[in-house]
Structures are given as structure tokens and as C-alpha cells.
Amino acid sequence: MGQTYSIFGAGPGGLYTAWRLLSSGKLQSSDTLNLYEWGTYDFTGEGKERQPAGRICTHHYIDDDSATYIEIGGMRFIEWDGTNTPTAKGHRLVTKTVNDVGLGPDVVNFLTVDDPLYFLRGQHFYQSDLVDNGGDVIAPYNTPGVNEASPDDLYSHISDLITGTTPLKDRTEQCAFYASGTLPSTFNSFVYNPGDVASNVGYWNVFYDQAGNEGFSYAADGGGYSSNVINWNAANAAVYNGEFAPGGAFKTINGGYSRLFVELYNKACEAAANSGARFSLHQGERLHSIWMYGDAIKFKLATADDPFSPSSGDAMDTDLAFLAMPPNAVDIVAQATRFENVPGRTDFLNNAQVANYLGSVIEQPSYKIAMFFEEPWWENTTYPPRLEATLNHQKTTENVFGPTITDLPLRQVYYFGDNALPNEEGEAIYGLLASYDDMRYITFWRGLELAVDERRDQAINRDFQPLEGGREGSPQMEQMLRLELAKLHYGDPDAANEIPMPKSTIFMDWGLNPFGAGYHAWAANYDITDVMQKIRSPAQLAGVADAKVFLIGSAFSNDQAWVEGAFCTAESVLVDYLQMDPLIDLSVYPPICGTRCG
Image 1: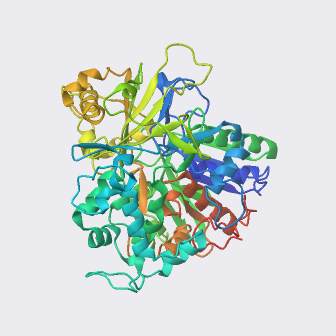
Image 2: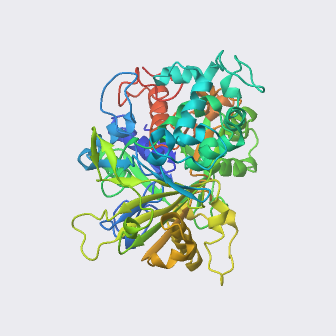
Image 3: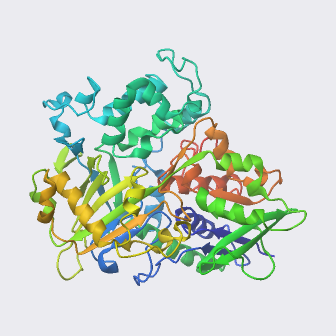
């Protein structure tokens, strides 16, 4: 008799798991795989629903998948060159998957500028203008010496203070530091001592301790990401923050990152047809509640039309369950499960140890606003972005996106330009990611979502916009964006009328349910290597031996905020618990810390 596999969530982790199960030969003709998704993704290219999947969402102008687009979710990955050594750089599972599904020829650069424009505390300057780079500008922060260099230098300095001067060259060394690394003997502090466990230190705390309030503010403002300087796990933060320096070698998919997840779904369907396994996608249905009854997995569903009420009928059964969802969505399921009156069950999601480990990550809301124009007006302003990067020791202007960084609510601006596919007909449209904000100004932009003559007709916690895709901004949102862009690029708010009216303005609020965040960070005072290992099997963590309920996704990974993190947690489950052959050599690339793979 065949087995039933149930995957809850058709985001990156869920689609990857479905594709791997079906294409690896693990599932046979007697097996069934059900993939449930609360939202409705456009896997067919009809343009009627939002693009897949999860926190990846390519938005095309007028919903034409050949037209100019902007990424209003995750944008990019770091390509792996195939070198099979522990120190090779890049996202190995994403790179391998992109090639395996046939998108390798469509990989293009997503370059960041060599010389970003900053507008901080009312002062414009390019990175090359700073004293350390041969210029005469000092950033407007009271941090003598530090303010003569870019904020990235400050991040690197704080990382060195935390980790010591010996670089953590590969994932194994990094994981060891996360588990038991200590502040080095050279660490000088009134608050902390050499030998203190680094993972028990808050990053904001230690940053303030070492750089003061002005140094912290320079890093928070000039780094572009407020989320990078919150009070997260200092051991993890010290390693992670180096990835965001300008000049990073990023890649994306021509036509939009969402194409990867369309292809994952298509390849899963093809593999199911070849194997004879029954594969069904159930969109508009979500996991309502789940528990163990003895060694049996029991669950109830709910519909998108009535997401908080379980569907009628008895609880359903499955042999294996994969919760491919972020912590906020898991918490929604846990809340409902708590009130299911089933004597003798094991409510594993509400187990004290499971709840503690689910709380080991910090939710980081993010907000993106895309604007589409008839012309690239930013090229002819007082302070234009210098869209030039170095690639293979040569300067290029092709596929260079930004960012420009400011302490205005815009925070970061990326210039997508006219990236329509060659077969697109009609007028050229130029895309501008006018605001990429995380955490700091979320409520500022939320206050501009509705027009001044509108009343809110639903509670914020019942607004599931991330499942639906981008929404048109209000006239007031457009005016506020033009006002801030005028300050940023003209240095004059009165120049707002120099910025043309956009053809369309689209916003995405990732802080809303069910996602609750754009990305996540590890909290301090946890051994995150132990969490990564044990939270993958929450029912086993709650004491149900051999329970086949698994939690996957980027939140509890080595690569938070990246698709690679979702793929890695899924791969670790498939290899460690289902004994599948790994997609790549995991002996030199542990997908998560402490993995048994390899």
C-alpha cells in the first residue's frame, strides 16, 4: 500500500520538497503527494493571480509576464561556480536547482553599484567622496575616523571584534562559532568580557558598546537594512553581515525570479507523470490544525474564504507532513490546534520545548514599493545613481541595479529600468523599486495605503495581501514617494513636480499575515545549531518517537532571508530522515548546522 505525503505551503521550501520527492524516484505509482497552498499562485502564466512563490513575487507591469518587472519580494541569489570545496562561495542548492530545471541559460547578473549614492541626515555624497576613498567628505555622524569610511567598514570592524582576527572560512567553522564561540581575548568592553559566549550577546548591545550611539546610527542608516542591526544573535550577525557589502556578486533569472518556482512546479508535474505517483495541488486551502494521535498524524484544513474555521468532517490522515511555512504561519496553526478537543492527542506545536525553539527567531517585517515610468528620469537629476559595477575586473553598466541608500522612509532604491523581454511590444516602461524598507518605516507606509477619503474595512490581522500580490498605491502614497525621491535625487522637495507621474505604483507589505515578516534573524541566548537540528522534527522534539512531521523553511536555517535557506532545510530533512540521495555533495557543504548529512 502506498504512502501519502502532505506538504503545507507551496513557497520555495514546499515546491522544492515536492520536486525532489517526485524527481528522485522516492515516490512510486502507489504513492500520493498533496501540496496545499493558502494563496493562489499563477503557475500557468495567465496573469490572473500573483506570481509564485512564498516571499518571492515578481510583479510585471499590467500583469503581462513579458513586460517590465520589479521584484517586490526576494530578488536574487549568489551563484556557485561548482567548485566542490568547503570554502567555495555561493548558494549551491539554488544554483544546482536552477540548472536542473533548465533555467541555467537564463541566469543574469544582479549587480550592485561600486559607488553608491547616500543621502543621510540631509547630506548627499557618493561612497567615493569619503575621505578613506580619496575624497573630502565626512559622513554626518559624530564618530571620528569611522565616519570617513563607508558603513560597510564599520560592520566589518564589529565582526572582527566579535569573532577575532581568524576568519571563519566555511560553514563548518561558522557553525562551530555559533554553537560555542566566545569573544576573543582582545575584546575590550565595560559590559562584556573575553570568553563570554558570543551567541548569548545581542548584536545591538555589542554594537552600541563598541561604536556608541552615533556609530550604531551610521551603520543602521548607511547600511540600508535596519534589520541588520537589531538585537539579534551576535555570533550569527558577525558572520552574516558581510554578505551585504556593495559589489556583491548576485544573480537572478531573466524575466523574473518567480520563473524558478513556476519551473519547479512544472518539473514536479512531469516527474509525477513519469513515475505514476498521484500529485495534486490544492490552492486556496490551508492547514488549520495538526496533532499526533498515537503515532498517527491528524490534521484539519480550512479554505481561503474562511481561513479560521476548519472544514467540516473528521480530521484527515497523512503518513508524512511537511510544514513549509514561516514561524508566523506556524503560530496561526498552533493557536487553532490548541483549541481542538481531542482526548489523548499530542499537541506538539504547543509543547514547551517546541514553543521555545519556535521563538528562537525574530520576525523582521519588510515593505516594498514599485513604480513604473515612461522614462528613466533618475538618470538626469542633480544626484543621479552611478549605475556602474566591476565584473571580472572590468567596468560594466549592464544589469546594475543599485542601491541608493537614505535615512528617509524610502531607505533603499533600486533601478530596474526597462527589463521587458525582447518580444514585448509597445512603449518602453522603466521600473523603479522606489522604496525597500525593513522594520523601521513599515507603519509609515501603511498609513498611506488607503486614500484620504477611504476607511479601513477589515482588521490588519485579516489582511492577507502577501497571498494576493502587489496592490496599487493611493494618490497620497504616490505623492509622498515623489516628494522623497525629489529630496533624494534633486536635493530639493520643491522639485517633486520634476518627477513624472508614474504609470503604476505597487506596494507589498510582507509584515502582514500569514507571513508576518519579510525575513528572520536568530535571537540571542540560543544554541542555534541545536535549534536547526531539532526544530525540523517538532513532534519528535515533543517526545513522539519517529513522528514524520517536518518543519522546513529559511527561518530556521543557515541562510535566513535567502531561498537557499528554504532549500537547505528541506534537503536536510529529505536526506537525514527519508534517506534520499543528496542533490549535491553535502560532506563539504552541510545544509544546516550539525547536520548528519555526508
